[in-house]
Image (cartoon, rainbow, N blue to C red):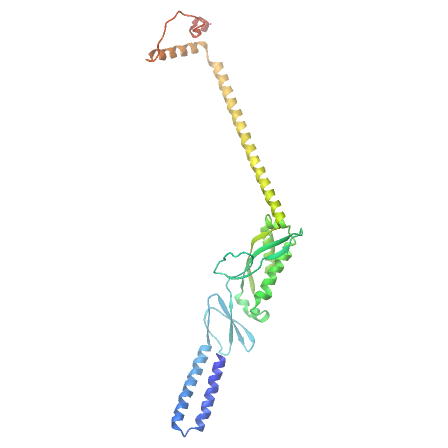
Length: 313
């Protein structure tokens, strides 16, 4: 825009000079006047448009005047500026840097940069292949310092080297199996703390570190799988033993109850009660139409329940 304004100014000067030389030619003079007016209007409009800059959503503008970075940051929307100022727009939305070998799709709302998964060594000397995603953003208020000290290629200069360094420096403090399982969160938190220190004072803000996948050597994975399977079998056996123990306790309680009931019955029942119950049963049988009876002489061996003399002793 500035070069276009300079061009119009030079054109206006040239036409002014030509007007002095051909002022006797009225037709040519009219043409020169029209061109001068058009050039003047063009200069005014160009200056007006150069004084207005629109910053998109999720972006800020850094003002640069003759190579000097200005401290005032332009926010989203229309901004009035010095027409001689150059505006460098920067994205302040959340960005994601992913180091992974997979082709899965991430959130389309996040600007994604991707590279290969990172190899690192654990404290026990094993080689790990890690899939890591780091969410970060540019601090709007610190964008002038970011442009002064680093430039717009901050991902290549700061973000990627800091991520790789943090991942490798922290990994040597952990055993491979701990990163894979029990201390995964501790490892991620330590990496995040180191990255925050690396980003501090550089206009970058760390949002989150995601450890997406940990790939161990094949033999280590097989050993871990076997250990997990053994633990599951042990837990299953504990469950079975507990169930059998509970069943044995139930049977013991049941047997105790039956024995107690029998003891109570034996201590309270009498021969008179049994004889009365026997007679009641005979009455029910006599009244039943499906039964036939044969009257026989009384025999103590055949009908002991009718032995009234024994019952009264």
